[in-house]
Amino acid sequence: MEKKKVVVGMSGGVDSSVAAYLLKEQGYDVIGVTMQIWQETENIVQEENGGCCGLSAVDDARRVASVLDIPYYVMNFRQEFQRQVIDYFVVEYLRGRTPNPCIACNRYVKWEALLKRSMDIGADYIATGHYAQIDQLANGRYAIKHSATKTKDQTYALYNLTQDQLKHTLMPVGVYTKEQIRQIAENIGLPIAHKPDSQDICFIPDGDYASFIDKERGRSVPEGNFVSLDGKILGRHKGITHYTVGQRKGLGLSLGHPAFVLEIRPETDEVVIGTYEESLTHTLRANELNFMSVEDLTEPMRVFAKIRYNHKGAWCTVEKTGEDEITCTFDEPIRAVTPGQAVVLYDGEYVLGGGTIL
Image (tube, rainbow, N blue to C red; front, side):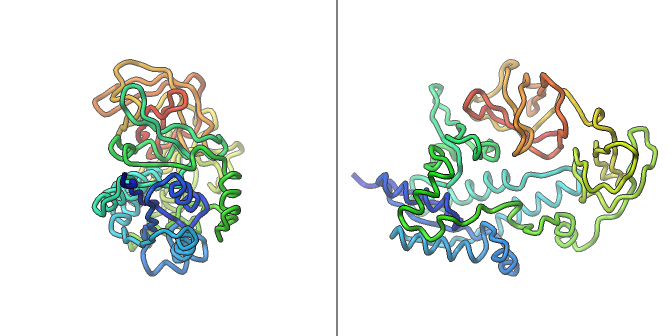
């Protein structure tokens, strides 16, 4: 019987490297691929900051592939990354929203583009080093399931994958803890066993989003006013791209009480400021829906929801309130519901689906 062929997206980190090893051990015909998604001129910055797609990623992944004795290629996805991730990131911030570039990158670059190219070269699957699992449910649908370790669970950023993508994806590290993965890497002599995890947004290693956006646009975002809910001017701000809904630190306001960003108004360049109580809400709406464990939501349902990557989650009732809209009503008030971020819904261990917060 011919071996099934799998393309492993290798970032040069320990997780994807061990993923390639595990799949080879399971009898797959494994090909390693590093996706070059970052623009050439920035490689030096990337390398210094250990991003997931700079020069060091290619060097490390190539060394690992050599140890594992698997073929290795670098594929260029710069155009797709610019269009689907960077352009989206800039436009969303200018609209007063807070995008999640990792979710866009997963869906449109790491999966859509890589899967298509892998299928073109005769692969049956693609695989990644994500801490998540994929199951086929009794209803025939594929769904992402929590990883074996709650401390390292990456299901939130994967809610947007399609059924076809899931059907052709393997996630071998999802049944292990991070410590176990590092141990496997050490046992088999991989040179990256103790390489630190990449942090922050890979294409903005210094974390200065506003400067990056100005550079992409070729001009600065204008300054504007901080205002209260009733329209009173509270001070001046540096430009709307410096702020996100729910933000408390770095506002430079002394109002005699903790101040929170409640809303960003791009049309008037205003940033609305309020109290902690005013930053709480019981409901949120979301669109750009993707359902995973079910085909659609036909009636209100009790689910566990996360409204950002590091949110511990909260119980709510979700119902369809439009063709492409859901409304979540939370049991307890939640803070910092941020337009542009994802709300991801869990039914037990599985991702039910999710959408973009309005």
